[in-house]
Amino acid sequence: MNSRTSVVAVITLTIPAALYLFQALFQPDTMEAGTPGSPVNEIPGLQFNLSQISKNPPTLLVTVRNGHPSSTYTFLKWDSPLDPQATNLGVFKLLHVPSGNEVATDLIRIRRKMPPSRDDLQEIAPGTQHSMEIVLDKPWMPKTKPTEYKIWVEGEFHGVWEKAAGSVKDEELEAYTDTNYDGSRFRSEATTIIVE
Image (cartoon, rainbow, N blue to C red; front, side):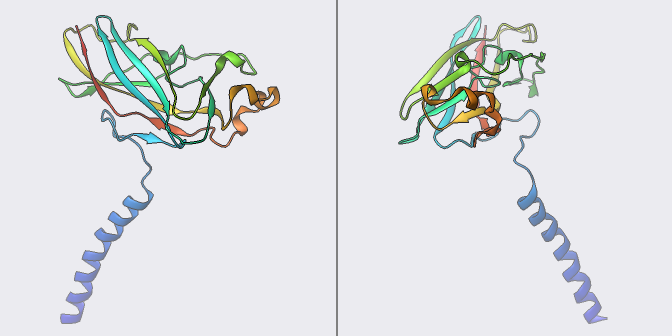
């Protein structure tokens, strides 16, 4: 009876511990719905930062910075925060602060001209940055004003070369999915914006 109780106690303690360990080791790095997560930068040194520069219309300054000490990166703007269509592609994530609800964005499907053009490339040398203004004036933006949001960017890079844009050959552009960092994830820190 005593040894049976010991076995049951060991099993009772072991199963929850094993489940916890399994979850910790094998749970994918995904964000909880509606919750800004910690930054993700799968390309060494590259990171996106957001800052508000206008409340009406709500306008962001999106900056990509290369903090790598020696590597120059060139990437396709497609599906990144520097894509001219980024606000229609789900790259920007918004959380309505008063309600705690994530704002649903209307996504559009874009047919890209292949192969990518050189105008679709963004080069970032070590220690430099590139910024772009984004106006959040799309129909999916809630009409409630004044209000407050948490906003961040999240997605995957396409076609990333560890060299200057001028060194990317035409055949490399055609085979952009073969690059080492294609599919690398990014996620910025969330910043608070006020809409008036």
